[in-house]
Image 1 (cartoon, one colour):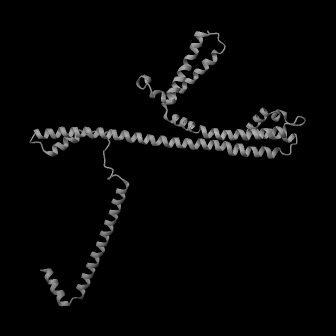
Image 2 (tube, one colour; image 1 turned 135 degrees about the horizontal axis):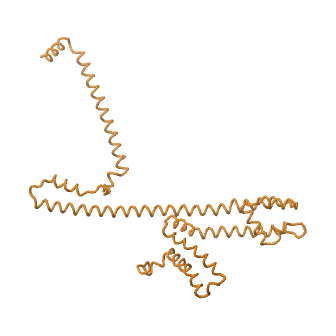
Image 3 (cartoon, helix red, strand yellow; image 1 turned 120 degrees about the vertical axis):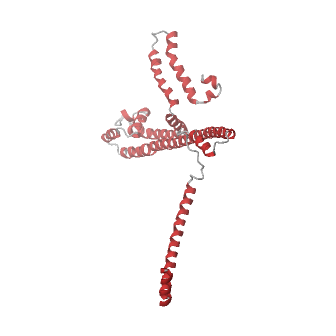
Length: 299
């Protein structure tokens, strides 16, 4: 069905190719049974490969797809780090073979040939049992063994392997941020579509009510608004103007309120000063004028 809907774009997605690969693996044991029979010696291997069917769950999880994308983006960088690590191990393997793999008193089990030296260096790089390896060298009294072991562990484990982990973390963080940005864009697009649907529905309902208002003369506009309110749903998101809900608008509005409070406080101080000055002026008036004013107020 996917190929029928998108016959060309379907094959551009790597996860669709993964589904095709898993589909072929699922039918591989049945084909072998039909061709080779049930006594084919490698049939159990083909049956074990069917466990790869669990990988079909990957396209349905966006989080797992994000991690796989991050791993895919780190291929070239990780390949460079692993190449440098291989060159470092190759150099130290030759040095270890020449220093500790001598035939007479050397450690032939761990450093006797290049393959054994590579395996020993891998144990040193992962810091797994390096004390036992160093103890074998100490028992054979190799003077340069401690410097060799510590130098390789510092370079391989503390630098190259940590560099490998750091590269993975950086690309994974970038992929997660990109995933969050895409998710925000999708949510915004979905919200805008819902907003358009709500506005179109409200416009149609308002047009219908206005048309009904034109035919019914005795209906008032307030009744028209009340009928329009009844058409609104409590699940509809509110369509607000961005200006009234933006942070700059709120900042300006709160600053305006602060200025208004300051102005009112200054006006109150001015009124208190005027009342105080008028009180002083009344005290400075002559006694006769003060009595006449008191009689005037009493009448």
